Image 1 (spheres, rainbow, N blue to C red):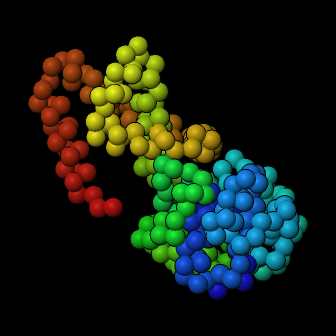
Image 2: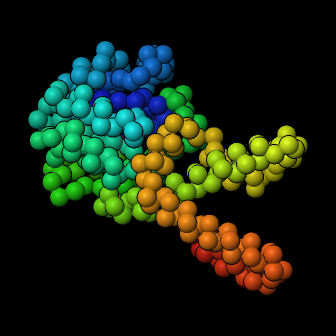
Amino acid sequence: MFNQVTIIGVGLIGGSFALALDAAQAVKKVVGVGRSREALQRALQLGVIDEIAANEAEAVRHADLVLLAAPVAQTETILRVIAPHLGLRTIVTDAGSTKGDVVAAARRALGGKFPQFVPAHPIAGKEQSGVDAAEAGLYRQRRCIVTPVSDTAGHALETVVEAWKLCGALVSEMTPEQHDQVFAAVSHLPHLLSFALVAAIAKEPDAAQKFAHAGGGFRDFTRIAASSPEMWRDICFANRAALLHELDAYEAELKLLRDYLNRNEVLALEQEFAQAREIRSALRF
């Protein structure tokens, strides 16, 4: 399907995209570019990419499709660099976890080439980061959200949707605003809470003893606290308004549970747990 795909940021997400397209026999050549020469050499060694570009301009010059898989705070800077070198038929997409800020950055950076940009967010990942964690099956049967706007080119949208389907993803569509509201609740807040729990216990005088005796519940709840701090710092600030709204709702729920405990309202606490259990048991992922 593609003569050349360029990956800007060849880590877990970008590397897995490259491997998935290669496994689907949908790309002839994958070119990688990024901040770390060492990481790019590792990607080349692993067969994730076929070629290392000297810089972003060289990387995109002959690309059919460009995937931006760098932290979201870098989006505008990278797009400004590559904009003059994009061909008229080159399609650009991203894999960022926030979309409103990405769309605004793309408008500013790409100017008249903005219709060639298709914002996207694959809902897949692992707590490990880096190209060594990349795998061809990462996106298989996982959701990928595309968030086109009114001036997104139709052929660009179709191409990006097809690319993610070739990776095995289940593609659906939202507005950027809907996306950021939804994922503030079901992704960004859980990561914030996971980081917070580990940090809170680590500051206690008996932290070593507590961590040594932590079981499966703690392990499952805090697994995502092993994720990239840089990436999640950028996500939290990029979606700050929606995240603060969800944090307010969560704090109100915690206050309710605290009040039940203070007032010894055993039945009320159990009912709150039972309601949550029923809702969670009905969910299918």
